[in-house]
Length: 473
Ligand SMILES: Cc1cc2nc3c(=O)[nH]c(=O)nc-3n(C[C@H](O)[C@H](O)[C@H](O)COP(=O)(O)O)c2cc1C
Image 1 (tube, helix red, strand yellow):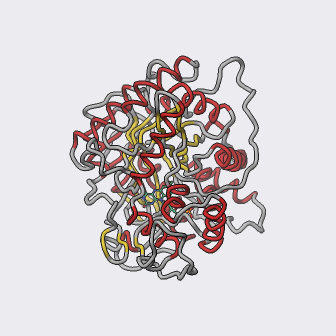
Image 2 (cartoon, rainbow, N blue to C red):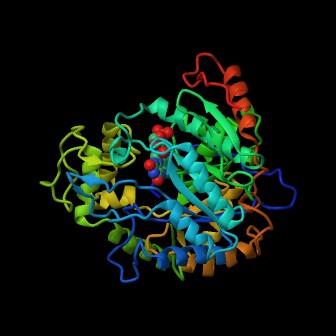
């Protein structure tokens, strides 16, 4: 995944574990809504047929991966009023796909992204409890707040929440879900009365095999990071470059103690891409070819238009970067906007393009299709191990550029190299997804809420993130 953050600091290597190197964990991302998929490749398959999902999940399971991961796109995205060409036209329901995968896998976690802004907690808690039962404790939920109203117009009853309220609702939403899972072990009776929900009843699912499904979060801002340490077990991040990964890792982990949590209780997985070759030179050449396929001429202009927020169709992708300022016209709908400061970003791109004599398309390739790990299987394994050793990550979510076969070679060639280095398991542990990832046992909803209250009550009163949360539990 591209990481546009280019400043550098160094992290502190882990020297604390006696003799045992920090273990690498891997997970598989099924690309779906994505612009890095190479559709022109003959090996590119359906993103809707079950065979594609089962192929990737079973390959990942053969490679002893922690989990299979689905992002969520509730609506086809648009660019200048048209469906964005590189989006997948169609996206099946996440929990239905994961339920089907439960039947054809045994060990791998089944992680689905589900928005807390456009769903209801009772429904989501029940769907995830069902997957947890069907899979014997392998359910996971990536809680996203969804960054635009466009995405949810198709089923939200009018209006939209502002940024801070989306995170407040997300925290409350998870508390409700965890409360329901807690009651499932007993008589199922619950009530919850808060700013966002006023519900009561009995939860119709027996005690969950995994205790609670594992909770992921993916927001990157300061609020997103506080949300992670206050409510999540795993963070999915874009900080794939080891330097910025180390900074992100140190920042997020440093927030945990205040919430009464140990470093190991929250795992960080950047999304990364791997390109292999039999020799280092072959891998570099392969990476160039794939990047060139990932960014077509039209795709390059569309990418720039999303940053410039204006029509740039008059510019030649094989010429210099457009010599016009950004216009803020929001011509693209439904995407997470990772670039907050368009002017600064464009200025830095102009510098890169000038220094390296790049055309507009070459610049887009340079900043959007850079592959995280490029090399022979042994090189890539060593670099992954080094990133984990130096605390740039606890594990990696691999984002293939081909579906469904894009991870075949990684499982066949990189996993054995990792095992050879002594940094990768040779069999799955017994137990639920928590054991698989190396997480402690689930805490109750009441414990999560109490820890958050203690942390935020004790926080500097000048912090904009201290929020009054209604008592839960
Ligand atoms: C790596 C990453 C993946 C995300 N995946 C999704 C997704 O699949 N569906 C979705 O609706 N939002 C997704 N989001 C959006 C976040 O939930 C959030 O709304 C957005 O990042 C704004 O919050 P922030 O300012 O804290 O980053 C993702 C965000 C990040 C950083």
